Length: 403
Ligand code: CS2
Ligand code: MG
Image 1 (cartoon, rainbow, N blue to C red):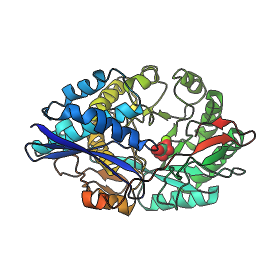
Image 2 (spheres, rainbow, N blue to C red):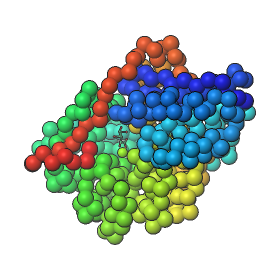
Image 3 (tube, helix red, strand yellow):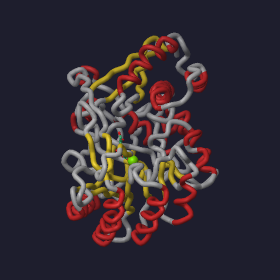
Image 4 (cartoon, rainbow, N blue to C red):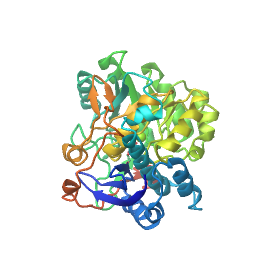
């Protein structure tokens, strides 16, 4: 099955997406997500100008050889742009191989390991009261796992509180908007939020929280300890993870489970965290960590240390990524949970898909491949619009901080 053509489709149905479409001499085509929030055109160019010329004429069935060709052959290895581009090619080739075999992708990976994929939704609000209302709404909607984020008294802007309630989109401006931050105000507030949320929702719902890289290790340890009475499913991105050793300090002080990895793009970013069991869940994704081929390697390595998967699934990961991730999640032995931030109706219309949500679980469907298509005519009606993620500054003195 020879690759005859490959195209990058950039569109913006409510937010920007970059999609790679690979076409073959057997009339089959495959799709991969290449969306990197705030830096979309970098990946589009990497694919169009540097990768696609090398794909034409290759055998689409040689997924591993093409992965190694693009990884080792680039010389400049790793990084979010390179690994998102490789991921898009890899995902499209897995989509193609499953279509050629006329089977859903999870069957090609090794078949289902569970009845469905447990997901978590995002409940957020400007204050504790409205966040509790949202958590209860998600419980009512059938979610068994819910992430809670709320505004922090005394701060003008908040992470995780987005447009309306159902949809959260952080890339909110043509140039980076500026948020303010106070770790001290946040550390005083977060335990109060979860005391209220846990009391309202009862003991059986999994609660999750995203610190979004903003604490120092000792502050993260303090937060983990303070949240222990509310038995969270995980505390995510508690501190920046460039220095993997910093998680030793957090681990020494708290039993709150730890999740990291949505911004990782290779196994090397998480090797120490996993082999020292400094984390409980690895959040790497199909679109940013080199595709299905590399994500399987990360998951298998993690399973040796009883670390489970918890793939990132925000709105800036397209339905193509979500579809592929659900097939991966249905197969992967050490599955933990899948993030599921719903896309808007206009996004879903551009990306028709087989997956569905039922009673707190997602099901990838039985369509051949990953089950997600793109309506190119409709996509063309939503041209790219530059949009940046915010930056963050310390409220008391303006120091540029982690967003
Ligand atoms: C967040 C993301 O979903 C999450 O866990 O960390 O929403 C993240 O802020 C965005 O994906 C950034 O583009
Ligand atoms: Mg996160």
